[in-house]
Length: 130
Image (cartoon, rainbow, N blue to C red; front, side):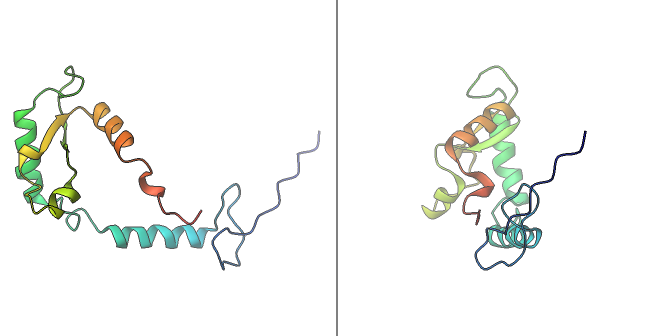
């Protein structure tokens, strides 16, 4: 039995790009790499986002010391310090201290992942050119 012919390459979906897309993907390697680099530069590293040593020492330690059990499921050990009810960016815009443990809650990893997916849809691909 002869192998099936492969699907022909498609042009890259990035406007103005003359390259062919990766097999089964909408963009070429150069556009994907450029997008990731631009995203990292725009977002900054964790210290530039405000998650420095001071944040870890004050916020995370304070929240996890106070909330030893997950505040949502009330079963698992809290391992994640989550800003709640306002996120870090909102607290900074309001002029409040985002590293104050009073602005957080302790969650287990499963509940933290579920809450993040529910409250912050879109994730890393939001605004991607494809």
